Image (cartoon, rainbow, N blue to C red; front, top):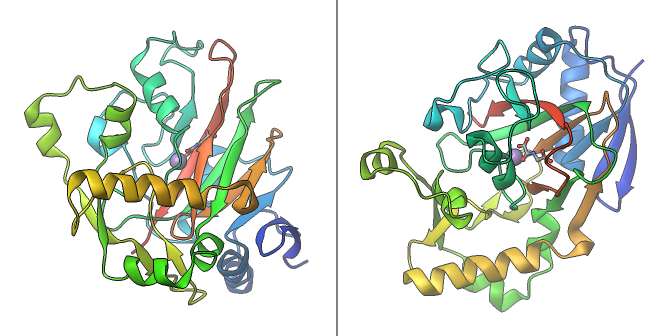
Length: 284
Ligand code: OGA
Ligand code: MN
């Protein structure tokens, strides 16, 4: 059976079925997922009981894997593979982490609109997030369509954005949350990346806004003017009309295109277990 798609919103996000992601994929299945990603940008697969090895094999069929913030933080990890990112509030000992635990700030930073690893070159292409344990309330993930957001800008606004670029820095979202306990050396050890504010998607040819919580300044503007522009664009781009909110069920695997979307987690009770596992491919 081949991939079947049911659009969720007009032109953004689709329910996907017809492929068992736990099995090796053939060329046509891979191509059909790539095409679906180019069109819908977010795909929701349900009832995929993937082991870590199966999720990693699935992800690797789409390219080299990203280590994300792990490269920068070199924190202790709970899962057995570096490429399997532990998106959870669970500590190394398997218990729900104390809210003052180091990893919780990273968890909270995921609640700011962002594109995974936009602070590095190459940045991320696909993220695949697999739900394992979920709270009864809260903890949804929202996705915003940066193609539709760009299309909706007035023409003079689009023209003013042409030629502007932003610096994306890994620690900026941490600084925003007051997590500033890094030495000068640590701060400088993490290089940043500069990307145009408006980019063209390689697969669909559509233009889009490339912004989010890692973007800390606009190269061509003063710091203040640039930050206001970034805030203003983010406010525009994350209006409800551009947003799909995913309510998780265990066994869901959601794939999103980090080039054409922003995403954020939503708040949940930090004393309740929430456990997901992410694999991310590099846009290389
Ligand atoms: C991520 C992320 C949000 C969430 O895994 O990259 O941002 O809802 N997750 O956990
Ligand atoms: Mn993320």
